[in-house]
Image 1: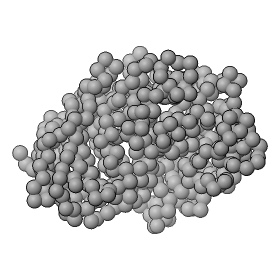
Image 2: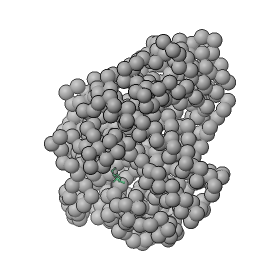
Image 3: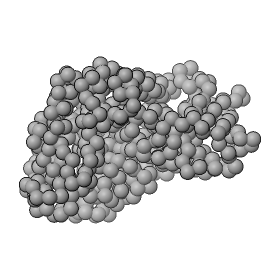
Length: 490
Ligand code: AHR
């Protein structure tokens, strides 16, 4: 079999991989928050103050660094004061974006910060610019972060929280080109400037303010943002890109029932992330050559048709090895762009879109995508280094191999996906600038349509992989078709 060369140069550092690149997104959508993350204190499902213990433990295991909340489209119709105080007195509202169901606001600010504290991750709030007011957003920041005497700090104390929380990441609006107000970029940029002016740094807290960025390849949106925003009031600009296999939002394709051709199309569409990061990055470089403003891919992942028999507004889909390959490709691409991309959040955390976790009653399933986050977690905080894989094709459409490497504390982590559904890949990895003496590896592999479900939760799991050899500074291995491998080199 023809060897596929991978070249890694540990001396050629691309930047630090911010742990936040391994973030998740959680919205009041379908069963993400309610029943997924939050079951209420009275539930028979083991919980701590209403938050599922199994889900918290699963997130701790992948070292979840940051969680975005409360939306999504939901964020721009969310009024945070409806979600504080005595639960029985909280307002009930219609969740107009997602199924028109009643939102009882039993999961609000206190519950979200409790969740983040239990997981040990940074909270990332998406503020309401679309239908809210400047004072509403500024008061949210005051409520959360102010230590002194003020109406909002007093209200927080009255609601049982004496000490303020720390809040770093604050998004100001979501998809304001669409569900967040259908704004023109020029108008949004002005609104952003106004809203952010009143979001203050209280009591030593320092906000990292994030503006709504482009939808996919809307280069003009990025251009207008960069022209009008600056590093004194903007630390990040978001980017949303979903992989829709058919490219048709009316009929996106099934999560579990797909042809090989549809699989390759899915991966090909995923690899467009490379173009997006390169070209948005080039636009940003013209205005911000020092990279003071980060790109934040705060919604990414596969978006399929919902599972048969489920509420179309709940966006519930299964997750196969195809999704694992998508996740590996996206994360390798994002790691390689870590000089510009400082955070990414897969959509979404639980029970929605390309979820890392699925729940049903007391049951919990870790999806193949979850296991990719587990395999890749050692990249967090490492230096991304030069990694090139030669371009042998699979399915006549995509490069067979996606690869990335980082070095942290003298240990190299190499992550490789063999994207072929049918062919093993013989790889030869040359390592320069790194003294390798020991190697260890783990693998996630199964047929492309394999998935974990409630009756077979461990169908696809990480296994030890003994197939990697190290000799003369070279790693060689045969990677099974449809696999994701992590190699640890010391
Ligand atoms: O993740 C689902 C939705 O996709 C989000 O609410 C919105 O921001 C995007 O369009």
